[in-house]
Structures are given as C-alpha cells and as structure tokens.
Image 1 (cartoon, rainbow, N blue to C red):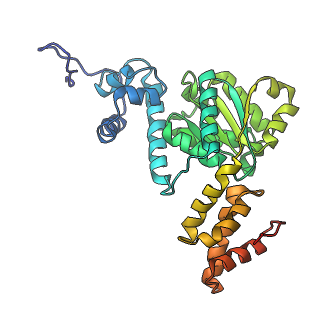
Image 2 (cartoon, rainbow, N blue to C red; image 1 turned 60 degrees about the horizontal axis):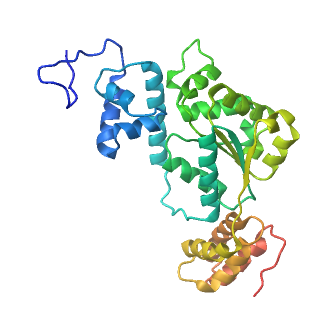
Image 3 (cartoon, helix red, strand yellow; image 1 turned 180 degrees about the horizontal axis):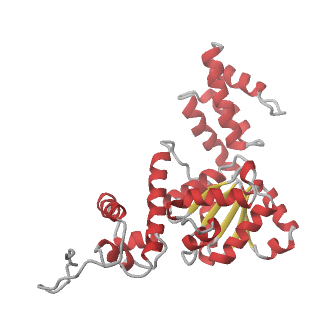
Length: 325
C-alpha cells in the first residue's frame, strides 16, 4: 500500500505506509481539522509544542517519525481542548481592559522566560476573564481553575489530567508520569486561576511540575497568593516574577455603562449608580451581581423604574456603603 505523496516528490516515486501503528480516527480528525480551520501544518505544530510543522506533515502523510505515541497524546490533548473551548465559548463580548492587556503581557513574559510567575490583583476586576481569553487565543496554553476541594497535590493532578485528556494513561503508568510525559519539553504555559485557594501541598506540586517539565506557570489570584508564596522560602526563591493588575479609575465608568447596558438597555439613568458600585470592593463582579438582582426585582416585585430596582438590589446586598444621588 502506498500513501499520497507530497507535491514536490519526483514522478514515479512511491512511499510505503509506515510500519508504525497510528490511530486512524485521530489521523482523519487532524486532516479534517486542517481543512475546516485553514490552519497550516506549521500552525498545528506550534500548537502541539513543536518548533515547526514537519512532525505534523509526516503524520498527515502517514509516514510518522519519532515517538508516535507522544505525538498522538499531544494531538489528543489538542483535540480535547479545541472541542472543549468550542462547546464552552460564551457569546459575551470580551472587553479590552487594562487588566486584560496587563495579564496577557505578563503571560507572554512568563512563557518566554520558562519561569513561574505570580499575577495578583483584587477580586472582581477581570483576571479570570483575561486568562480565559488568553487561553482561547493560544491553544497550547493549559488554563486550569482551582477550587477549595482540589487545593492539594491530588486535586491538581485530577485537574491537569482532565485538561490533558487521560485516554493515553497506561495501566502501569502513574498519573504523575503521564502528566510529565505529556508536558516535558513542550514549553507549554500553564495558567492557574484562583491560585490563592491552593494549599502548600498544591503549590509544591506545581513547583515540582515546573522542575520536571520546565513548563512555565502563572499563578493567578487575589493578593493572598503572593503572601502565601512569600512565607515559604523554598517556593519564594523559585518564583521571581510577579505583577499586580488593577483597573484604572478612568476606565471604570465606561465598563460600568457597558455592563449595565446588557441588563438594562437604553437606561442611562442607572449609569451613575452602576459606576459607584463598580468603583468599590468587588468591582465589576459586584456590579454584575447587583444588576442581575435588579432584574429579578423588576420582574418579580413589579419595579418598573430601573433606578428603583437597582437601588433595591444594592440595599439587599452585603455592601456597607450607600449610593449617592
């Protein structure tokens, strides 16, 4: 059996099928993915952590070289991430804030330096939105979000396996070995959101992961993540990059108006009150919650005046300040 030849092959030349076994379903998916997305083989190669598209080209041509199992593990992971992102992408608009710009710039610095960095800032300013947007624009990035129930090494292992798609995990292979094999030498950036929820064991796991794979890691969260790392001499000495992000005062009115417009279209009379909430603790996240509650008051309590509904929602919130007329 012969395979389709590259366009620059001399007439009369045939290339035998590789004797190496590969996954035909995965091979067909890759061909269709290239055709439907318009991505080049070099584009795919870079997304898989290779320096060019030669490995992808050989695989597409059914003459794969090197460690096919490792290539297919990366390709399976890439397929999993593209499908996950496609199914979870929000129709909501992503606004280009100073937090988004600063976060993306810091991620690029950490990725280029192959280091571990801390990105910190107050809650509700848009760090998570910025990191998710960066992952959607850079499909080699692993975006993981921690939670209180998975704050340790076991939890981080579970989260990473879910991101990597553990279909290739062998019966005699430990989960740690699988993660190392999947990431070692790939230079893939790992962004860890809500990193302030990690305990010491969880942070140690990530630092050990960086040592074993040399993959750059961004620990992103509230200011307490910086304090937690600083308290541990071993962790602090291995994490020299850090950056604090914040919203600029001059951009808050425009962002508050955009957010209000989503819930109360064409109601500029609400804007002055929305701007006050967005400028206080909780920032845009707090405003989003007040706006959603205001909509409920409008629908259930018959408050037809948007300003009255907004004030009622704010009064029921846990905020300890009054709105100024």
